[in-house]
Length: 418
Image 1 (tube, rainbow, N blue to C red):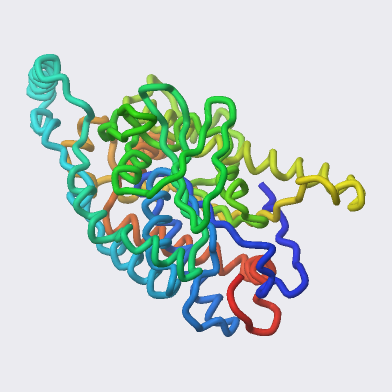
Image 2: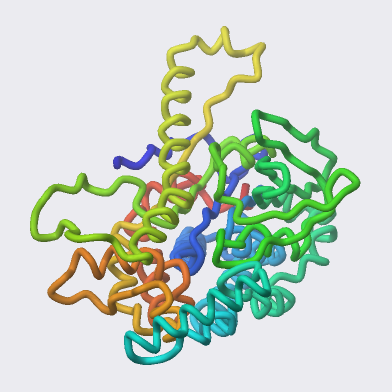
């Protein structure tokens, strides 16, 4: 897909009327790619002579694992470079046990087909008795958030002008509505759309756990809302307009960092086409891609069409309206992340790998291995995988160097961040 152009504007670096927004999308362990993008942005910012402390994104939004990265970045908004280094240090050292426990699947951690079937029967019987809430327990992630995301800093950072707003999304299992929870420096009117609503108030770790709770895999999170408690899961579910939160919060230009290629080459029958009945891992990976990737591609195309339509309206006709074009820069992986995951699938805890039917690293059956690894790519919180994604994010961003410089106005004389 061709990337949306990042048009230059006069004195961009000092144009407070054109605040930049950042959208970090969902995707579990795939969010490591975002960290590489942020590292490259920090490098390009210093290269352009913007070495001073500050934050190039006054409006930060995130979904799923992207919500955690977004909140961590917002909590370090007084010093963008330092915040990025802190986030990168965590992702470079990731291990699965820092994010989840697979205790509920231990009965499957046996060798041999018959013992596997026996373990599965025992597991199903146990689940029928205990009614488990998810396949994996993300309690370790809750502990990690205390260290990675000091949300108590947000009010001061907003008072000092380092940050205008932070927003994270989650989907309510209780009501079926999609929610954007946002915290802003000044009161902002919440918005309501069909099956979507925005809720102002302090962002908490519960919001981050809810936003990143991959359906079926991690448990729902209870959050008080409207005088009662609702249970929330991953913010990518039912998210029909991922970019809208940044725009509602005042962004006039948005940098979108994807967690997967927005458009894959059309598949055709051939040696790389999957044959035979799909495994559970292949079905789940396909479902995850539908949840995490499809809505963003549609929203990007919709915004491009709106911008094109607005370009046909004379400026004088738009002057007395709220209609404004939104500048968009999209950075997304240049390689298929599930292909990368296929090289690292053995790093998954053995019980998780066997429970979902992963077939191991790519080999002669390349198509099957790759499609099996789509699900693994969301759970591969392992240094080998996360570091490779971070390197890809850096490379993809540096390859768009000129577009990034135009987006921020860094091709002008050094000034303060917008």
